[in-house]
Length: 253
Length: 324
Image 1 (tube, rainbow over the protein chains, first blue to last red):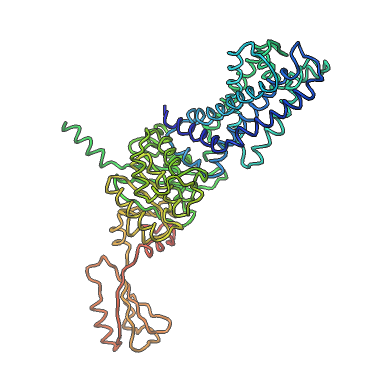
Image 2: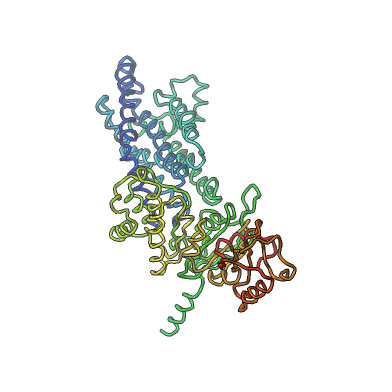
């Protein structure tokens, strides 16, 4: 295994994060703080508890997930799209690295960044809303699993995209709406019966439900189903990336 | 011990790159390379020449693993580039034609990245030497985007050398760079060759190939039409010309001289005699005697040998099937 190669890609990507600290870290934290001020404090103070959890605390897992998904996708998609756009991908293609090593480097860095951000948002939330974490190990496990899975998904988007506009299409038009409709700000029990069934087709429901369970022990769907769905998506993404590198789709003519 | 030495000798005489029956057809159906067979000798400077779109960069990209061959095999330093890609690629450094750089990175960060990517342990002293040799050390902390085109070209060379390759591809390295850098670069290429690095270069400056290369390959319309030792190529395909400036213009070549391969200039002042440089008898003495017999006087004469550029132009414009 080309450990130096993996390290080179990982450090290169992490250096980009720290070089663009303002955009990478500060901006999402600021945005999330605004969510807590508006929904947690201003509106949340006028809303009742959900399953004995204050509304401000209830939305924390959803907000972390919202950022985790968007950041994982954008970090990984941008990471692999940039060398394609700048032409420096020639070096990656001519280097003695396997597709799996490339993946570990890019996805590992993207996931690290989004986990850092997720933890930072959790820390920021503490300033506004008191909360407890019932299952901290599971919370970290969900955080890692989601970050890796969606970084992988972002990597695929970066491979597929051939313009900066396309990089934004999936996060803006698919992931953000699915997160908002996936129970980030409400429990799906609050929906009419028909919508409760329809919403089960939204994969983000399972992520938010599982993550919220790790905080408060309450879930919209069974935790095992949440874990299973996330693993299923992870395996689908892995298979697709393996196929991309095997066939050279859009990267090796 | 003797066997080991013999094996080493045999190994060192084996081609460092062997391209066998390689074809490349793009998805649209355009066949860019047609059954390429090419051996590159260990330690040589090989110049790959050809007009734009001939397939030079595609051939390099195939050997480096950037593009996949439709058929055929490529061996680099004893390793199949598909089956044993790690070992094969670790031996190769590539300086691409285009100035593809990580604009926001520093020079030091990008060469460090290249070394790691190719599986080499960090070696600050080696990278410092590479940067110093390329006059980049003072710019090590500069962002690449702030550098001139020539400096960026040096950065690409430094990146290609960062993992100590034994094979170096230079795809039109002198395109768009000033004279000083060109001289520096060729000096460095000679040093690398002296250290045992095999160098394959493409260039549109044929005089550079003539000056630098040990062997020449000419590729045209996806076919490798000639691969030859430079000196042999110039001897075999080179022509010499004797140019006579006449004292009095002629209206045509006299009948008595029709057997000679002579060309008269439009104004009738210059007579050009082409002869084979390989022939022992050039025929010059006899021609001069015959001219005197015909009362043709000249006030100046000079001879010149075909340059590699002349040979290159004649090769790529030759009708198909007339290659030697």
